[in-house]
Image 1 (cartoon, rainbow, N blue to C red):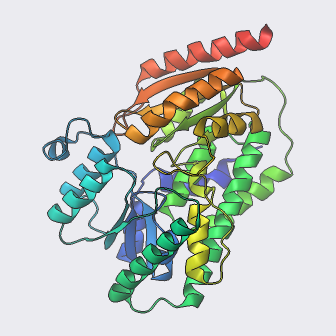
Image 2: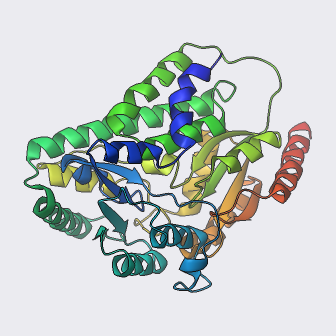
Length: 379
């Protein structure tokens, strides 16, 4: 099936991460940058902002390196350096989520060095189950709502409900696309799926949703082509801002059929928005989502959850993209790797930097891993 026309809108946006936002700002729309998928974008949308995900950029981070410790992750250094270089003048507001100490530090530095951009911090509860967490999350959302209303005017329940419905419909469509990709990797590659995801973070959801639905509709009725059977790989990690990492893996001879990445399926794995008020519905949706390594839920073991996801997508192996100095993911990696070993699922760990292009040496390691998977299948 020729995907050229269907993919063109997503590829256009992903080819210039912030071009869509610049155009929106030039047309008079307020733009809010979000550092994390735990930023409640529905609140921003209801307040009239275009919420976009700040994904950093490639290149040197010398100015940020003067302010951040050497053991800060490349994502943190990249986004701070871009702010210091004033590369995002179209941002009216930036919303951080308190996920780790490094990003909290970046938030403080951002506020101090870019005073022309409003800065908000969404402090979500690190434990996401229980009534206490729900009450805390609702109170935090109410606080953020009042902060936004002071800037933009009242946010009605109707506007917030409309935004929650839009984002919920969009997440459901993206979940369906991820499931279809796992079922028919010959129709939709991992790189194409990530391109669609990256575009979602950079576009108005109301514009991205019909485009994603068009892809889903076309592929639902298409037959997967026959031919070479590639080893099926599941990708896990924290950040992965660059589609090139997925392209490199697939060029090495595997099919990326699933992922657990914050710039991937995890951002769309929210619970159903349900509650007595829009704020309660929004709180429940964020608390019931698949948590990232910086958040915890009683009884949930990250390793067992990854084993279940890999088996669900019929993956032959798992590739970890471990951003250097990402402490939350590093802490999770030990029990996760043990769970994969116990389940007999092969895994490869790759250390990556988010402000650099994927190095060619990674392809060699992935090729060796793919060859091992092929030999295992033939055994």
